Length: 363
Ligand code: CU
Ligand code: CU
Image (tube, rainbow, N blue to C red; front, side, top):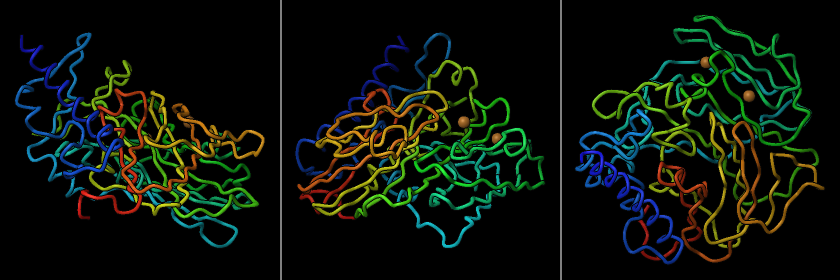
């Protein structure tokens, strides 16, 4: 009986998410969109004094702290804007791995391993032909490493374990343009990625893509929780990671953060999304509600002969990336989602706010 109640709680949370996406796509919102943020109305939790379960595994999906809407607003969103390419021939990147407790949903704490103290790690941006010089300093308690999918390099020499307290530097030439995942490759890799050790590297082609008004980087990820993370921080539940049963999913580490803090564009702008699916295991079916992608570079392959035009949804596989361009003329709130809708329910949803649509939040 309790299970039924809990199931309803989760269902209610899901309906809220769906409502957020659909309402936003159909008309200008009268209320603050954040109030319809997925799974964040505490009323959905009153039924969820415990958890739902499946196959002996407990789900903590949708369970947040009180005042979830306020917490979501107070959360500082991960900066999604693509940073500029550093000048010179060498792009120097130094990350200091830290064991940190981070917030992954409103009031939900998680004990992560953060490449630079957060998850995802910082966006690396280079130009085709530049050399990336990567230094990883391990400030954590166990060995870690870093594997760049943008590199053609012997993994046993570059992607090596760095012991706690040590640093390691390697270089690779960014000869392949695209958007790529980087991640810790220390065994078990499933655990290291699931604990937040991932990020994106964008390698601009030469000659460059056409200039566009907005460029955003979204790293899709999944969180597998040992407890709800509200009363005390959650850790990784390896069994749920193996079963691919996430409690939360996110773009850039925090469930639905760009619902409370929409990405922005002006009417007529072309927006370019660089999407990486860090997984560790599930596919992202990338889609923007209310429009159609003008251009997609599937799997981050920038060769002109592989470009797709006029498509609705394109899968980004775990460990893959793709580049999406969309030009939106009409002001409004356009949700971007993984259209595998369980993921919208779990947090892979955000808003692209084009212009100043009527009746939306003031910020
Ligand atoms: Cu690691
Ligand atoms: Cu990999």
